[in-house]
Length: 195
Ligand SMILES: CC(C)(COP(=O)(O)OP(=O)(O)OC[C@H]1O[C@@H](n2cnc3c(N)ncnc32)[C@H](O)[C@@H]1OP(=O)(O)O)[C@@H](O)C(=O)NCCC(=O)NCCS
Image 1: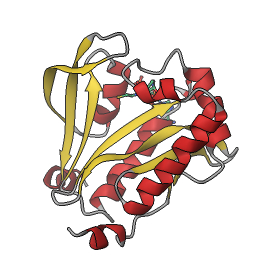
Image 2: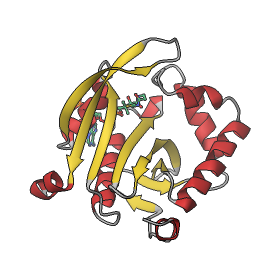
Image 3: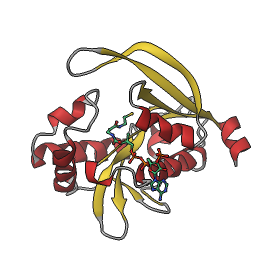
Image 4: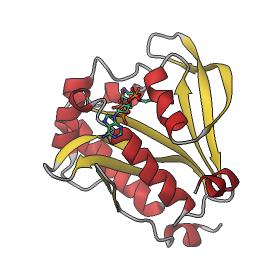
């Protein structure tokens, strides 16, 4: 795929689910993201090093502007998870490590501490997976989850992703410890059989 073809691809900026609104970052989202990170620092996985760089509101707004730039160029598609009724920022998600030639996408996510366990992440991942296999014509969608983070890998399991394997020493956390990672994948063929 050429740069021009990639940049001109139509990518939805808003997805509405049963419980959440998933929308692309907008200028001015920084303060809402900062508040959610501040209440969640202790629960965010230590293998999410970007969190440590988000110290103040300006760091978060700078992050937002970079994500907007990448979204426009279709290099990375980062979205926020919002509660439609209250307009509250709940967490982040997106399609990352994009290979447009293969059409493969990695889904990542986190939710603020006070909104865990309400089905918001599951709803967001369901929406992004459907968009990837729909509008973006994905051949493969995958997730990489630390073996010890069972709460997280239950999400792809719930949505019908296949546990493709566990790779040892695949990620190093902020303290320098190596961890195994579970790979979960959904091929377009599997997606069609589940629909
Ligand atoms: C891992 C993480 C994303 C899980 O989020 P979560 O809030 O537990 O996810 P969900 O709410 O979508 O799903 C969890 C539970 O909500 C339940 N739930 C509650 N209300 C629900 C509803 N109305 N609809 C659907 N599910 C609902 C689900 O059944 C599920 O429960 P179960 O696992 O006991 O069956 C979250 O703990 C987190 O952000 N952790 C820190 C960062 C992190 O680890 N990110 C992932 C890196 S790979």
